[in-house]
Length: 412
Ligand code: NIG
Ligand code: FE
Image 1 (tube, rainbow, N blue to C red):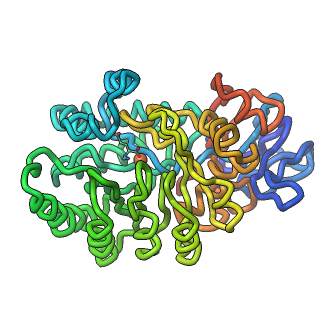
Image 2 (cartoon, rainbow, N blue to C red; image 1 turned 135 degrees about the horizontal axis):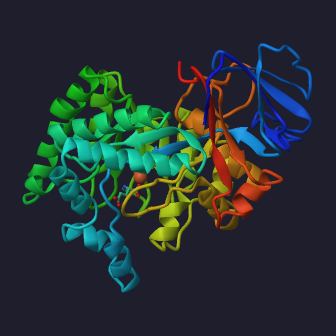
């Protein structure tokens, strides 16, 4: 819902979860308060009834739990359809890497994307973003990566931009041209370097020239790209003014987290196989940890990311759905929070912060602008039919998010 007024007061919330708390109250939840919004930004959180001016539009939340709109900081929304058949093959013994090596996996999504027209791709991307929005997300990071050619990577990033506008969401766009080696480059090993050349010399420069992405990403993994190739992409991105993020250590100790540290990337994501030394290198380089337990779960991996170690060592730990057609056809942050609590031993509060303030940090969004309900924050909220914020993770089997609420000019 979009509230079309310049001055708005949100009242009648059961609890306002500001995500701007302190040690004693990490979620910063308050009761008997109302939120004043002016010109698309939070102006103040005040005692209930404090705003009396008749020129302020009063919106009654009718007992909802109010949180900041969620931030999903790692998604692959530019895809046509989920690869459910592969999931079933994996249940019968095939591995994610076997399926990819046989030309399925990411390449199967590439084939369906290339076969679709631009309009169909934009419609499919919008559908995917609206699936996230229905679960409370207003800020989304969206990656390309199922195009793997100049033409189709550009089409993917344009589709993400157009779909986000249509969905009333704010997108950070990331070019993941280095997601997999496209079919036309398979064959001799040297072709892998030739494709990386194409990414560095043609795709990223054109993406940057057209302003279609703020960041680049690499799938650093055996069967995908090496740490050296990751560093090459990272250096090219830096010269073009693009920031970096990396798919790191998902299926093996790939060297991805180490490369992210060397590149001072925004984040290293997945981290199932990242040990202490590389975690410390990330900390030193100011790299956030983005954990994606949805893919660990869906791929039925035995090894989960070391969330407790990362938090104990002082890293910024965010969570994300990794929403994609293969390894994580999961568009529910609440379900990811549930996995974070049950499988990564995070607290419900840490899980919620992982989708709000910590996700904002992982995307290097200006401090205080997103992921909190505090003066200066963009006026985008999620409402929940729940009594307490810990229930978001606990009740994950049903979508109890009742919607995203935005106020006029929240994106400006
Ligand atoms: O984050 N690991 C690489 N990329 C995605 C999976 C993409 C896919 O399977 O389509 C991920 O898990
Ligand atoms: Fe991913």
